[in-house]
Length: 324
Ligand SMILES: Nc1ncnc2c1ncn2[C@@H]1O[C@H](COP(=O)(O)OP(=O)(O)OP(=O)(O)O)[C@@H](O)[C@H]1O
Ligand code: SF4
Ligand SMILES: [Mg+2]
Figure 1 (cartoon, rainbow, N blue to C red):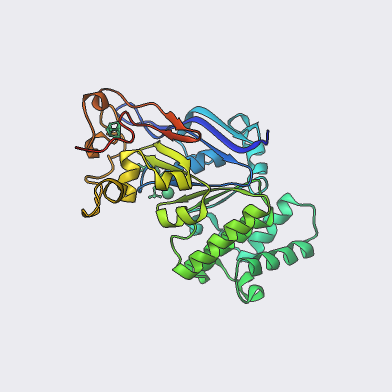
Figure 2: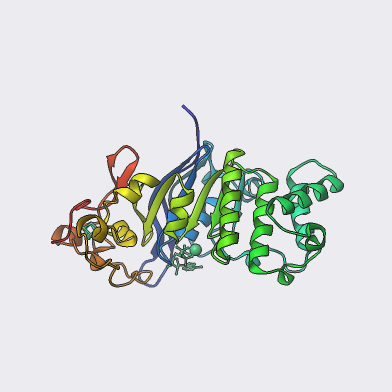
């Protein structure tokens, strides 16, 4: 059987609080198969970036991973020390961060930063590193690559900085790329170009975990999709199956699927209420206060994940039911 690129099982990240701590990532399990682009989608604050940072070994204190396992091609990432993790990052494992300014060095020209990344991980001359950098800049559609490579991050637009980050991720052909909202700062044309780059990377052997709050982008790009809510994965499945047959009330709400599938002719339903504040989750199912199907069972316990068809997993006591 083909090995999976990334296998996250029961991952939990905790932050201490006065009231005993909160878990921005809570019992998350997901797999990125070789050659796949897997989407992670959900409203702001649901734990997408925190999941990504956990995989990269970049959870900042006082937060920490308090449970679960992360395997990269079978290698147990949580068992690695800082040095081993640093050598993986930028090599087998790369991430494009939500805010490129925080991950680029403000006082070093961007071309030099990409060169350094190549020199750190590959035995090549500086001249070769420079050549590869300019090639990568051209590949990601940075015009006047020579000139731009001498620019400092603050001299570039948000879109160009994002491209520099993607070029940096691409130069080392990582096994896994985590792209955290890589197109949020961009216009539609640039967005389409970045999505095309993601597909090219996948075709060259990089598996991708693609984070977004944009369902349209996820639908276009991802083979498999995980919908996250309040630190947990509410529903996951093949993208087509999930978009055509969503069964979790949250996914249906996000997709407006309740109205389009079951109540033809009525107005699109938006999800009432808002995401619970960190550390103040309701008892039972975290989606309960916003859910039209919530009952005593839901208020009594948090539903466990159930596989309802191959690869389609849902956390809901009333999956697939229609509100009365
Ligand atoms: N350094 C931190 N310390 C404590 N809590 C944090 C920290 N960073 C994020 N959080 C909290 O952890 C939760 C998950 O945050 P995360 O950044 O993973 O959300 P997200 O899904 O990426 O949201 P967005 O779509 O806005 O990027 C949020 O409730 C957030 O407030
Ligand atoms: S478990 Fe209950 S409250 Fe939670 S999403 Fe399902 S029906 Fe709604
Ligand atoms: Mg985020």
